[in-house]
Image (tube, rainbow, N blue to C red; front, side):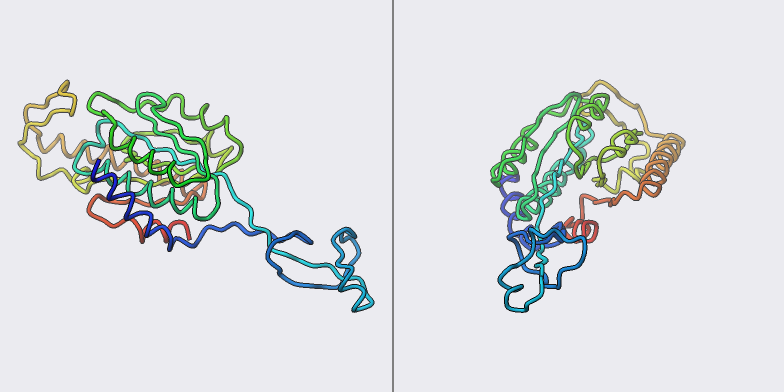
Length: 268
């Protein structure tokens, strides 16, 4: 829990410099930031005419203003016992905190899901940073040793929401079908991994077991490592092709990295 508090405090300060992501649209005559004043043209809404300026110039003028509109952001964390490897779960919490506080500071609407073998947690938007803090506490308290990720309910869950920006955070060491979700929502994908997951050669001849203790491998052989790396490469290649075709922003954050720069580049 102390680690969770440190992650929260650090992310709050850094998120303040996350200035990208404001969604501006030009409207006419709204009470927002002034953009420009121009002469009335055929087709403009006469209700948007500035009569004070029109009287001064003796020609009808309209006022263009910038209106700041918030968007709906849904952050989905895909977690199971594999997140207990090294400090992956802490890195997920840090990534979530940076994005979550940034979303709130930009006046967007934040919804949070934690998916394990079920819908573990859902936090609806509230205009308060407390929702991010509570979500981080929930992440750090999770009992993941006996959980295996189940994504069967994910599409139906997200399709209930109006069109949103869905940010998926997980290690993605498994095949995942996001086609239906991508048809409804904009998607971003953040992979959180430890480098040894992609290159476990150092564990050759070691005895391994799952975090729940149910599965044991007497010795990790070279051919087993080779097969694992090929399977992971195939999964990554399929996901990469999908993201390229759908123009989905994505990045991979490793446990030994500071995620701030990669996230800033990704969302800028």
